[in-house]
Image (tube, rainbow, N blue to C red; front, side, top):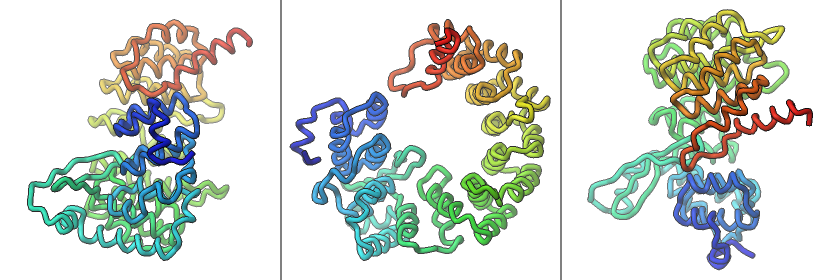
Amino acid sequence: MGSGPEGAREHGSALIAAVERRDTDLVKILLNEGGRLAELDVAFGMAVRAYAGDIAQLLLQHGADAGASRPGELLTLREAVDSGSPALVEALLEHSIRGRCPRPELMEVCDLARDWHEAGAEAELRRRTRCHDGLVRSQVQDDEYHSVNEFTLGGTSVQDGHAAILTHLEQLLGIRAPFEEVMARAVQHDQHHSAWGHATILLASRRDQRTWEAAEALRTHAEPSRRLFGATVLRLTHLFDGSDEDAFAAPALDLFTEWSAREEDTAVLTEVLVALGELVDPRAEAALLPYAEHPEAGIRRAVANGLGFPAEPPAVRAGARAALLELMTDTDADVREAACRRIAEGGDHDPVFAHAMAALLDDADRRVQVVAVYGLALHDGERCVAAARRLPPAPPGTPHEYELDAVWRYEWRRDGR
């Protein structure tokens, strides 16, 4: 059966209905519950035709086969590029159907994306609609991690993800745009925008000295956005380096340790501290510790996430131990959760940590309670069983809380099954 409207009507399921309503949260819940592959394929075709790139990506992640849709049942690549949704374009270039787009067509839509980017989504929308009404602007989620701006004018909507689309298409075509050009596309937006995400990931994936040096040079730039961009590229370059040599580990440690001591912008400092937290080294930990009492919760959360890498034997060092125990009592729930999770997933099962996690079982924030239960289960703490039963009901729409699976695994170990 194809993925056309007839097939969709036959599959009158909750998933199909959720896709029709473009209810992304409900789609996530239903996908986590599982579904038939044929139904996923139908839903994928519907999502693409509805310009719902975020939902199309979710369906692909859960096993939908883009190739099950015949060419005429999906949007054209040009229509997707015009929409301004990077997620939608990527869905139509998924590996199982990428062969449907020959290189000349990719070159053509790459030029189209560049035209949109250079003109600006708002200006181009006005030119195409010839409408002088008031323009409505909103922020929408494009994929799991990134957002875009959506402009609506005279009943026509377009998103401003063309810079990200351009970057993606250039990568597929093997076009190596200069560092400065790729960065210029990103810094027009904030770090949550698709243009930023695509640019930093592309540059980091190059993993060459020339790109590293270009990003490193930004650490003293007067504009915080440029420093943030450079820090992100450098962090991801090391993070993506899966080689045995790990050539960027030592340069990253030196650079971020020095940088953390003088950076004053909160967003940039947060990124630098996140980078330090990804480096398994006592020097990185020592550079994090001074910020454990920083007034900004985001900074303290970065510290909590980065502390506690196991030493030999697997024990948390004294300074990190004191900081994590303090952060578990932080006024910010996200900081408490991060510190608790760090302890939960660490290799140090000192009873002092079990007592600290038990103290969070009655926390005012449910997510903190869940992570405390999770931690006690991983640390073979019997209190996790009763605490899991006492948890308040999850709010409507909450995805599956995998942390609670640790409780039955603990019971399995305890009972010798």
